[in-house]
Image (cartoon, rainbow, N blue to C red; front, side, top):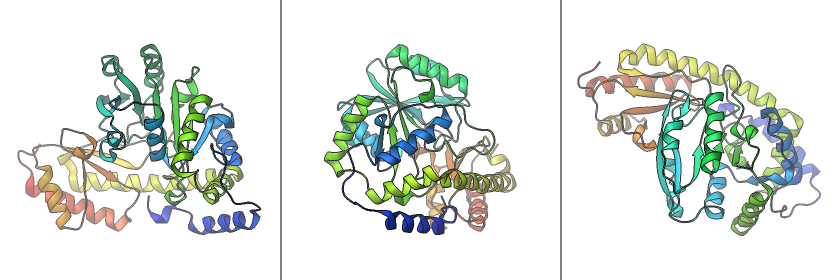
Length: 353
């Protein structure tokens, strides 16, 4: 998100208060700073997730959570099912550890259950991003979530639920997470403060069965001896004091203004050249180009104008799509960028609709 959306002054104040109160400053216990884990336990109750602090592992962002799961649970050459498109196609976190990705199609309600049903028997785990999916912005419906969990339990297919955008709803609250319906320890639930509070804190969490969390904690200690003690204390203060909830409420207001402005710009400049669904939250607008266009040429011409595009190929998408983020650039940059995109697309498009 834009640096303007992160609470720099309040963060300085909280950090000063935390550092003044520190009496010991060594390594934390393997699962993380206990007051932070307790604060996470209280925070996720809002999403109807009821666990103990022993079921929570503090990690250095959601990416580390995926790395730990890959090392601690999956074997090399395992097949990981995931939505197609998916941000993970560009991160390469699973592939770098010897895993094989298998995309599963999506529709307007989320990942398609019939495609999961037909998926390979040897698939070891399913990775999903159900709330304001990156890159499409799709919000998985309550019925689809219940159906997916039932199906995965039947197939004995564990689930990684990456819910880092959940708090960024711009209209109605999100449906309850799969983890809130999980009665058999089938779901590993990943959350993070990076997209909402500060990427620099590098604080996230994994919630799962205690035995799994203990194994992941042991591996994390071998990797880095635990996340930053200072960051964990700062995060605990934000969550336990209520500051975090108040901050996210303000972020949602600003993101809604930005989303609405970008939708207006797309309608004004791109008009019939693209189709899209207005996202109900998150950070992204997913544009599908109408007509034939060379995405490589589009990327190069936009780069020549000082604008870096995120084309659909980055996310495993076969058709001509673009991910627009309305969270980072300034209002002026958003307008000039979309106007430039429209001009370049017009110069390249064949057989426009």
